[in-house]
Amino acid sequence: MALRNRRLRSTALLVAAAGALVAGVLTGSGTSQAATSQPCDIYASGGTPCVAAHSTTRALYGSYNGSLYQVRRSSDNATLNIGPVAAGSYANSAAQDSFCSGTTCVITIIYDQSGRGNNLTQAPAGGAAGGPDNLANATSAPTSINGHKVYGVFVAPGTGYRNNHTSGIATGDAAEGMYAIFDGTHYNGGCCFDYGNAETSSNDTGNGHMEAIYFGNIKVWGYGSGNGPWIMADLENGLFSGVNQHLNSGDPTITNRYLTAMVKGGPNKWAIRGGNAQSGSVSTFYNGVRPNVSGYNPMHKEGAIILGIGGDNSKGAQGTFYEGVMTSGYPSDATENSVQANIVATKYANATGGGGGTGGTTLTPGQSISLRATTACCTTRYLDHSGTDVGTIVVSSSSSSTDKGNSTWVVRAGLANSSCYSFESKNTTGSYLRHQNYVLHAQPNDGSSLFAQDATFCSQAGLNGQGNSFSSVNFPDHFIRHYNNIGYVASDGGSNAWDSATSWTDDVSWAVSSPWTP
Ligand code: AHR
Ligand code: AHR
Image 1 (tube, rainbow, N blue to C red):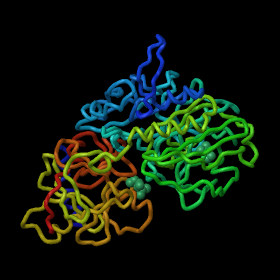
Image 2 (image 1 turned 180 degrees about the vertical axis):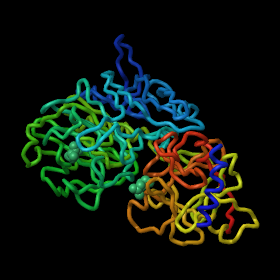
Image 3 (image 1 turned 120 degrees about the vertical axis):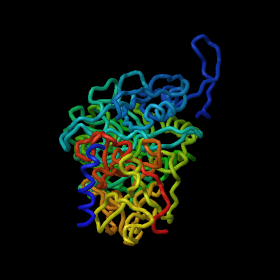
Image 4 (image 1 turned 135 degrees about the vertical axis):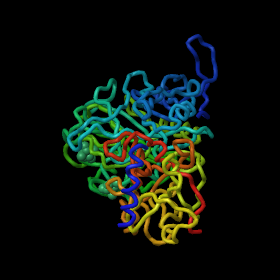
């Protein structure tokens, strides 16, 4: 009660406020010269060329020097295309970092490198869910290739990309192949984190109208051995792990941090393959005839492309995508093995500095901290809780021990993602900072996966250049913010009052300070 009044009083004030596969390539002129053969060069030499090639991390042809993706920043809605640093090379993330400095960016377009114009953009509404879907935060999936920082596509539930007007993608029962690299530790049991071929209407038009790679641990349709996650094929009205509708024990649980996932399909044959994108080869998890369920032989592929969603725009799933392609024709195992060798040689590895971007003060689990607001109005105020209410209060050395304890947090490894953080109340052990309907609370951990997600925040350098900013792991464009001295997770210029763009950047930047209660 007292806390609320305190906040209300101050409201008025605030209203103002592969390389390795280096191949000797014969050029048209007949001169032999070394060129790096990237995945789509390998598929082309195998007679199954890429008809779509998507990556925010690197060029998928040795000669590709066009745009990889486009970002849009929230400060002025300006957009920037990001290309590789050189033909055939890794993405120029420095260009993104400088363009997005002090604001937030989303990925608006993932360009098709195949020359067919099969770009992925914000998915529209579909039969299962409205739209348009959310766009991925451009800094939520930092990674590196061969030591160079780049960014993947972080799909939180609600995020989705699509192209319903493609060129050259398999239709009907025609053969195709595809692979993608995912984060094998980022998945869930929602429908459906997919990459591949889907309906051009965004509706479920029946069995066999899709053929996409799925990754996650939903068990509504098929599943493999263990507890998941599994690589499966989304063939519409069914995720298939093999010939049977439900269990196929040849499809293993697979959780490599960087995961190569492959699905290919042609007339009455298809296969699932997968492996560790950082080493070794891909294994075959299924190779055989179409499922023993009616409607999948022949197939009725429609040729749209989806990323992060199901064929009917079901968008409850999450995952991270780094790169992927779709081919014309059924790639041989040998061709796919060469692609895997190229992927391993690309040397995917974690970016240093923890999840959700880099920079700011390093946090160490176990340490106690206080978080001081950096907005000019409020630099004596600290993030606190009173009971379950979260906001900011003025704290000084003469404050009560209750106020000091209420404004001290113990850093914990993120309950939902250990490269991010959770914040446990210093004086209410077992209660964590979590959002609910975008409002922050300090609540006891109920052990649910929703609680873990709602209580996990990824740290990055403060968006106003001071301290740290903390993005929600399940709503990555939402950051811990104070607004009228109450705590929220807020997006810049979003639909709630507390998403106000005015002083957003300052309100989401927190100075990591010595704990008021050590
Ligand atoms: O096949 C699984 C899912 O079922 C598809 O992705 C979706 O279109 C439908 O809801
Ligand atoms: O805060 C946004 C969402 O609201 C949380 O994820 C959930 O707990 C609630 O429905």
